[in-house]
Length: 264
Image 1: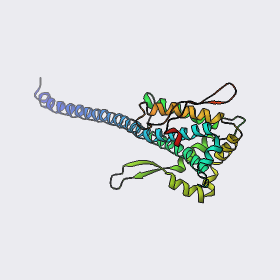
Image 2: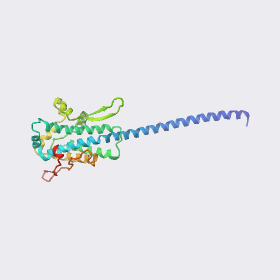
Image 3: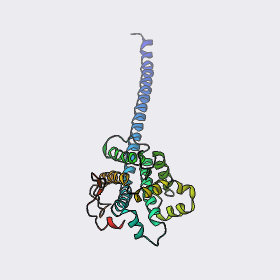
Image 4: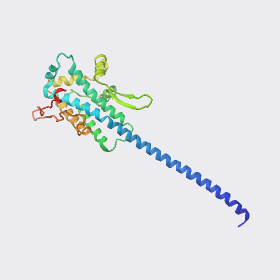
């Protein structure tokens, strides 16, 4: 082997080593990038689902309060309920509108909490299916327009009720839904806001005529959702979650309510 070749070999090995090193470095960077992207994606999905689960408790409570009001409207009829709150103005109508709005607000809170999530598999997919079922019942077209909210109306009311609270200096966002005081102020003073709740007014008129079929179906859907969100009734203790059903003659069949149920 010539001296020239011997002198060139180290240079060749050096160049090859640099090229290989560069190639391996670029390849490693690409692999690391893909791993980071995948990790970020998993973290987003997990955090979104965790955020959804954080709203399960207030959503279960909102659903329990709404189904409890429905239970009492069906059991006691609207006239009896109105007499119970005689002297409190339009409280029966306004509070019933609020209970629907409060539920829609927490449904929207959950939706926004899982915007970055695939939502596939596990408990949250089941929750979504139960929410979808309630939405279908409320938007269902039949002879009764009472308590009939189109899908877009349900979403719009939820958006009006929902807001994020941002914790200063941390960027942490906490989901919130308007309470009864804030709702009442808007309901009384904002005619456009109040217009969203004409299905409640129509529903009350239908109930006065003895039509409770949609309410019965809504209550049953809410009960199924509550039992999924809170199977041990940690957050909804005291609520009677017995589904109402209609007998052959159209009369509602209900077991005796608990003390908590009878006060809503």
